[in-house]
Length: 225
Image (cartoon, rainbow, N blue to C red; front, side, top):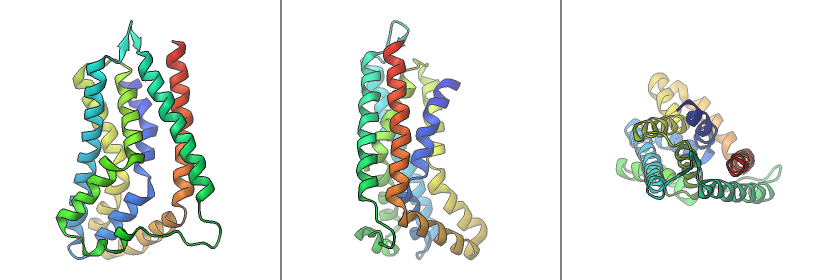
């Protein structure tokens, strides 16, 4: 189980530091009833990750992710494909990143996030984790990595839970800081999210480059086993 945890740790960290969800939860926290909305966002975010990961693990179990004591060829092929996709996305994001002095455009929905209800804040958290293609790619990759070890179902559940917990730190930390520090958390959180907003494309591009290379390496190791 320890090897499986090690395999999914980089993927969980990558999900945790995606800028858009972190910026979104900070904006939610700054609105009326911000703590309640922020809690709804974080819980729904975690549920979304768990749902995607569970569905991918169930699929992997149904089609058998192990073959003669090693990961099945289709698992390595999936990791290879996901790795290549991430590398392509990394190149695209890097080329399209705002240049020095340019302002990164804010999504329209973020401009109205301070008027979201608790339910809508929760729905946004779920959508950003379960329906966002970038997060889905990494969560499916994590599930494939877990399935490749052929662990018992209860151990797979533990590893997936660890993945979800670590992947949720990015959105959970602002909520904890806001509750613990109150108004004193406003300035550091605004400074952090401002920096992340300016460098969103570059951050995600580097993450995708590193994770894509990792997945391709794991796929090559699987083919060679």
